[in-house]
Image 1: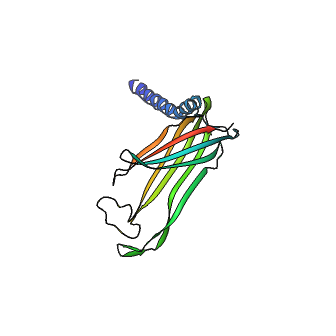
Image 2: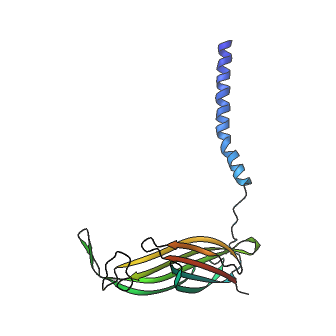
Image 3: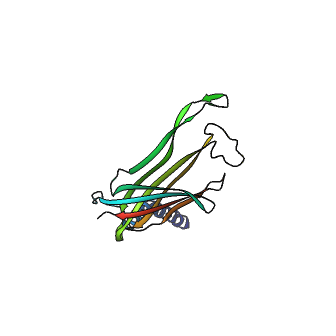
Length: 196
């Protein structure tokens, strides 16, 4: 009798365990359906024209050495990114690395800005912004400890890819970066304006 009771108890336990395993996905699915969905823009959200001003400022210590303003027209909720680019093609002479000779080649050196915008609630806008700036350093702009040369000897590149949330008229400092070779500082400020 005891053995029979143990046998029945064993199969009852196995059955309950199997039922729990089978039921678990249903519970998880129900919990997921009840969870709050992330805030997203409707595919048919209206386009909102924005004006975006991006200002790159470079400093040597406390001294401002260059200020580069750029303006983009961005349509919020448009899948296509707005972009602006200015560049100069620079000749890179032949170089040999690990027995392989590369060059001469031309490389675009300048500034590229790309942005997409999405409407959020409360009059806010989410900006996905890419800022890339490159500069040639040669005879007239040597870095400390680097030899002078008649040809551009190196290209410094600053790149940032971030998201920020702004309201109409806000002007935050988007990012700041310091060049580790000479201590120069690049600051990027962004101003959002809703076009009425």
